[in-house]
Structure formats: structure tokens, C-alpha cells
Image (tube, rainbow, N blue to C red; front, side):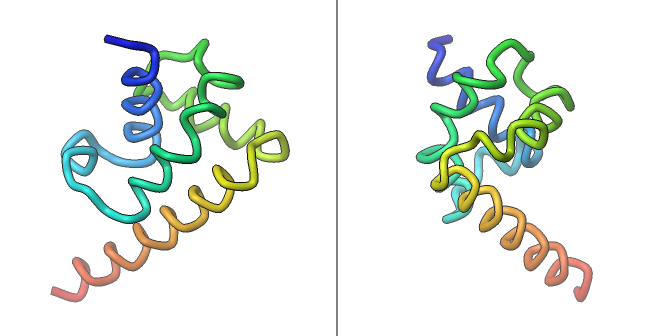
Length: 89
């Protein structure tokens, strides 16, 4: 697996399930586009999918690029809205 694919997988797994990774959403696409470089710069020492990756992003929040920070915020907002819809069913 290439380092870029590993980075994308790590980002997807730290912010959602593998099943969600297969589904495309604007938030997920923004994470892929804006956070891959930040993962490689700050968090690539951690295995994809582990809680360490999410903790690493939180620890490095002030160091993340503005695009990645915005993508994380948008993704979390999208996930909360999705969760509310699924809970309402």
C-alpha cells in the first residue's frame, strides 16, 4: 500500500468506520483532500485506524493546516447531523 493510501485509510479510520470509508460524503472527501499531508507530517508514526491517530490529530490541532482543521470541523458536524437523522428513525 502506498503511503498516500495508508494516510487516507488512517484518516478515514480515525474519523469513522471502515464501512463509512467506502461511502463518499463531502466531509470525508474534504478530509482526504486537506488532511493527508498533515497525517504524513505529524501522525504517520501511528498505525492507521488506531486511536493514536485521532489523539495525534488532537494533540497537533494547532499545527494542522487551516484546510485540515476546517475539514475536521465540517466532518464532525456532518457526522453529528447523520447521527441525529439515524436516531430519529
